[in-house]
Image (cartoon, rainbow, N blue to C red; front, side, top):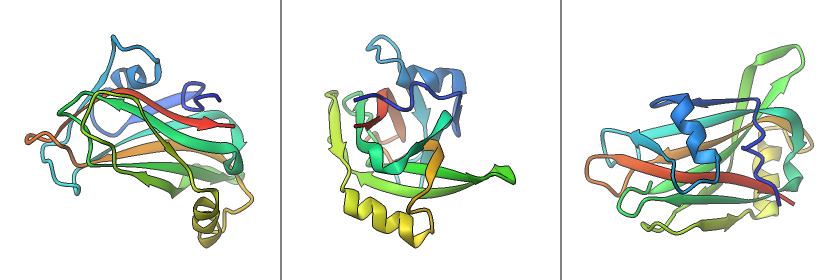
Length: 159
């Protein structure tokens, strides 16, 4: 299994430094991405988006894996796929693939995708057979009272 986020041509963070956000993809326990949402509410969110080097078939994606600092985990993590049309490569249509509710701990957590559920979501957005050009992860809320999230690793793995 391979982490598709690691081979991204470009990584972008909605909050904080994109350079620091890349630390969540390097598989090192020595580096992290610190996100300050400002509120522990799930209405507060940060997004890490990756432009893939080459499109990949959604059907090959198997699981979301993440590691957070204990006490600084998000309440909900949503993995997303982005699709672009050949005539409008800058317009990305995002589809939520999977939601996960991680435990508030510093262990690696793996959330397997339900393939049927993912296909239903994609079909509803007319992307059932398409290959995605972008992948992303949205972190919603925080177990920390000040809305901080500390991410040691993020990955979306294929077969």
